[in-house]
Image 1 (cartoon, rainbow, N blue to C red):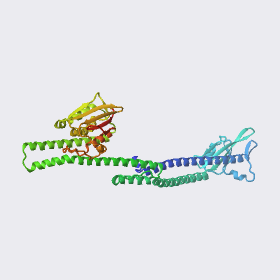
Image 2: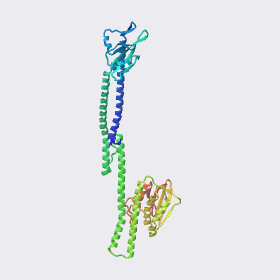
Image 3: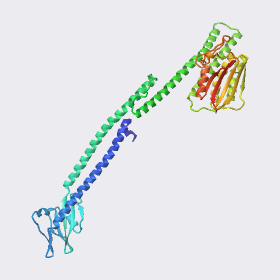
Image 4: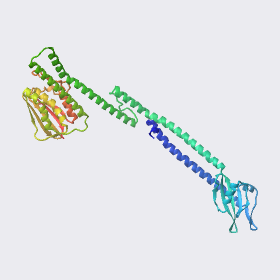
Length: 448
């Protein structure tokens, strides 16, 4: 059955319409021919009734026997008229043996109509009454040949008419549906071409039929999502390239230096430590970027203990803090649920802690609290702070702030932008707050 169904929408619509129309025309043709046949049968019966009444006027009883008399023009009545007295034929026209037998079968019937088995004649019998009793029977016969020709011609004509209407309607439907779908085909090909070569093109709110306007809006939304996805991939690639360039360059430089000349143990150890830190940084960067990509693609955020996530993030920077002589403390008065996965919460907090440990003189404080419908994580450090004029740019990719007395800053300016991106993907945000001493950054996440 599926093989008989057209593969195009145009073909299916036309086939459905033609099938419905064919069914309707079939019912109309059948009803028309049935009504015509019934009307012609009534005409035949009416004609036979009139002939039978006329024949009765020529039949009388004389001396106890039936006789027929003819007036002017009554000879025409003899054609197809039988007069019986009991089972004896008083008058009968020339007829075939089969017709004579069918007529004889109606002699005992009163007012009955019948059709011969071969369908060639219609018969009608009426009683002859004399003196209050039945004296005989008159039977009249009428040929159905002319009526059969009429019904046959009507059937053929109605079928030809229905076929012509069906072909005409199918042609009109094919052209009309094709014209209606042509703009859809054009829009589909345009959307496919724009998706491959020009993601900034849109159909926009041009004057169109309502259905096509909805289709255009759907295509525009699809192109927006494709463009956003492509921009996301391009941004991820650019961030990976940008952020990994520095640690990779350091590893390559150390390898080149070590390969040029022999080094003592201390130099080799320092090079190994630098290579290890660069490798760890690359691993952290990759983890953060992948986490950001997963967070933006996820529809429903998870739930975590914000205090526990903060403590785990602090543990990750303990070694660097110890190396720099910085103390990191965590304050979380009670269990506080945040509307984000633990991994995401850690990745949001990690860049803030890394920057705080890098720039702090002695102390970094992390405070977790509940504020209305949000969980707030504040990160304070006692470092040089962020200049007021730079607060609006710290979340721009590539933006860095390196004090003159801290030349060993090895970041590429993507930590805070990634942290904000992760937070916004989870329904929160990251912001810089003004403070008198050091730097103060705040993470806001929806409460779990």
